[in-house]
Amino acid sequence: MYIVLDIGGTSTRIASSKKLKTIDKIDKFSTIRSFDLSIKRITASIENITQEGKTQGIIIGLPGTIDKKTRRLARAPDLFSSWIHKPLTNILSKKFNCKIFIKNDTDLGGLGEVAFGAGKGHKIVGYYAIGTGLGGTRIVNKQIDVFSRGFEPGHQIINIHGEKWPSCGQYGCLESYVSGRAFYKNYGIQAENCKNEKIWNDFSKHLAQGIVNGIVLWSPDIFIIGGGFSQRAHLFLKQTRENVKKNRFNPPPIVKSKLGDKSGLYGGLHFLKTHK
Image (cartoon, helix red, strand yellow):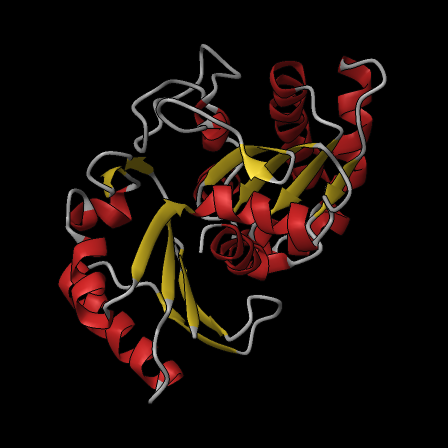
């Protein structure tokens, strides 16, 4: 049995797969801020999913920057401050006696879309996951592109006169305009409750600027919008495409995720399949 953990700012999803072709079971619960309490909940969930079966491999997707040498979370959003530098992989390895991998959650989300979803058949894929925050990745030939410190397109500056954003300390970054936290701060309403066309038009202008920058830097064959906001793509994606075209000649297709909140889980399946 193989296990995929997708630990996001709002929800944690734990999936099992016997043959790494499809997901067999999923356990979903609210992400726990405390590292120690979360480990207990995660361990119990894995034991329940696998029951008497042997765990052959586990991959963990976490928001933030992963230290390649220590395989620990080195930098993360505020919610995960208690997780930084904690030996998550060591704890799970001792408990389940199997290979443990740890990756950025958005990297796995992009990988999932390329292997199973909207990016299937494309060589170079740009992917933004918009949820509590904004993450992004570049997938090339069905592999997470190489990097030194990780991809952080959510913290690109789109307005040098913007306000300071607490998660990165920068002024006017994309995430301060395009994310769940920013949406409520800027418009005074939760995104899931908003149907105001003017608000979504304004939102789309900022997102389009971030996508234009992503196209310039990554030169993808297709650009995919994932994360929780992809469920509301009908409210902003058309306007976003139009705004991108105004600023970028002949842009690639800009589409919504096909896998929704399961992108990271399917990305984990593909990663485990190619790293047995």
